[in-house]
Length: 256
Image 1 (cartoon, helix red, strand yellow):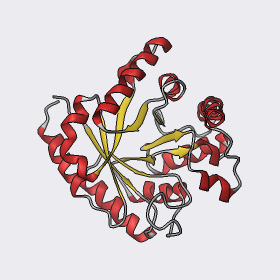
Image 2 (tube, helix red, strand yellow):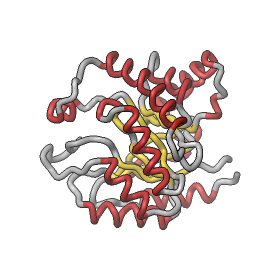
Image 3 (cartoon, rainbow, N blue to C red):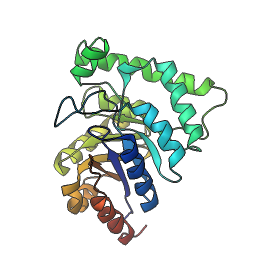
Image 4 (cartoon, rainbow, N blue to C red):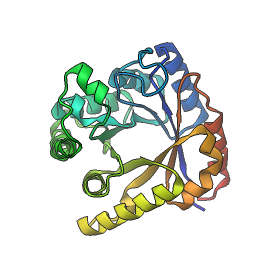
């Protein structure tokens, strides 16, 4: 059985910078493969007006605080930053982290962010068209920045839309993220394989990641059987890393 990777997403809502820094340092010390925040401006659950912190400034601090794990936003909203600027920000954080940054990106969906920060929410198809256009811009800018990224800065695309999003994953992504349950993940993964065939892409070049709740950690085998390479536990403050430890122990018990 192949080893799977283990990550954690720390929700930057109803918390403090100090608590987040303690949590990502602890996760890195545990030996996780990846540490993530999300890219929103307001809470996604609980008190809608609770404290909330911005993703990319947090990621720069995470890059300096950690030593081992890949880091990134799960996932960046394409609409919130100029694509050339986003590429530059990603490259700079990649240098701070000594080459551990992942540029996770998606088309965006949380209407409150758009309304309160003055972005055009538009339509879901329109946001996907913008993502398609901006991915090419981002990749071009990454190829021209001086200095370039430390290594080959991976691109992750988040989402599960079968007609557009998974096609973009096949075209551009090194990693793909979606959610469960395992049956849903397996179905979307099969459709991604079909897009890879159409795009002339080796499907095994794309790392399959899945965001799970801590209570699902015991069901890791079903996700691995469904094709997941990388399980990411999603948690808010207080940041419970016990399910992460459970996954790390299970991953150690698998053989390469």
